[in-house]
Image 1 (cartoon, rainbow, N blue to C red):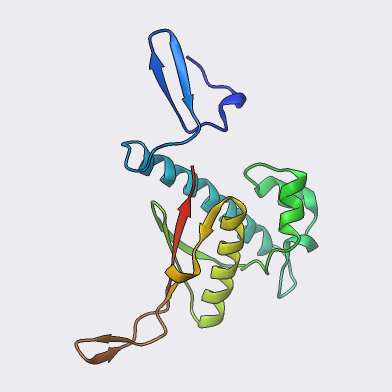
Image 2: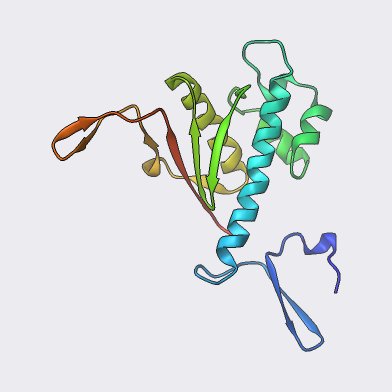
Length: 168
């Protein structure tokens, strides 16, 4: 058995005798689902990091992908296309430094101040939504707002938790 570029849209396979069945979706709760979701998110996170690294090479204080030479942006993308370039024209400014921690479909981003955390969140949200890993605003959590624990107000470190829900 060998893989082919034609297999890219599929998320898994099963061998039944001499036949190979390709699956375009994986049922929630199946054994392979978390691993496949984690691998897909890893690809998106790598794209985000590559775009951020590219932005760090630009001297302007605020970098938008539409201001960078298209062939440089293209090298960072998972799958370059005309549709991808059109989508990136509306992209928020790209953080020149981004901190990400991923656990399957949960992504945490932090920064030294609210502005950095918010700009990272906005960028991550935009790129992730473009890959159909839609970030639901109701699941957004920011740690600079106080939290009541046993009737005592506590403040936490700067951190935004983003929960991605992708449809595979």
